[in-house]
Image 1 (cartoon, rainbow, N blue to C red):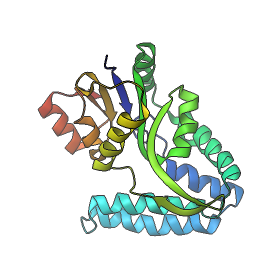
Image 2 (image 1 turned 90 degrees about the horizontal axis):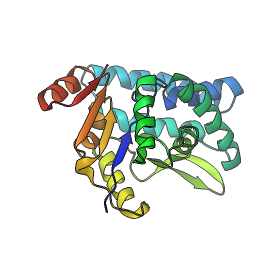
Image 3 (image 1 turned 90 degrees about the vertical axis):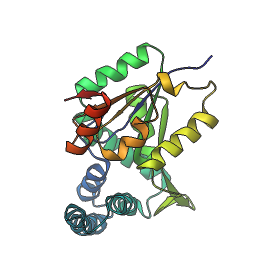
Length: 226
């Protein structure tokens, strides 16, 4: 018998916090890769402006942003990274969660749905967030590790846009014991980068959407959480 899933984006959906903000804050606070955090801020502010001016394609902007965030972890050992991700999850992500969306998440847990966080964030961090929310499943971006240290690079492709749907479907096929009925499942997202996930399920919900996503949601009669 197929089960129902409830799929949640993280940044901007479950929380007003952002992974990149948490990592740059950690670097500055504890003087770990501090110069990298300043360089990240300067270069990626420029990238953000280029994307707003429509000079840099949105997909390219997101890809560069995620790979740039990975550089903040370059040289950090795996044991040290546990401390970093714990701090970021506690200080940046969990302190800024959205009560209305958390209520939805707890509803799905109570219904014994398969709750899954799908985010461009790094899998190690998503697992820290999952522990706090009692969510056992997470699909995100993999980080490269060599000789027990993070290289500052990602493995494979970053988990954003259509890649979110590809990685999620792979996870559903290979990591879950029971099949998922996507036509009866739920998804929550706040950005156009979540569109591929929202289109996969029978019950999509957009959270504080921007103008373009709000227009799509209204045209398709999707639920909107303001």
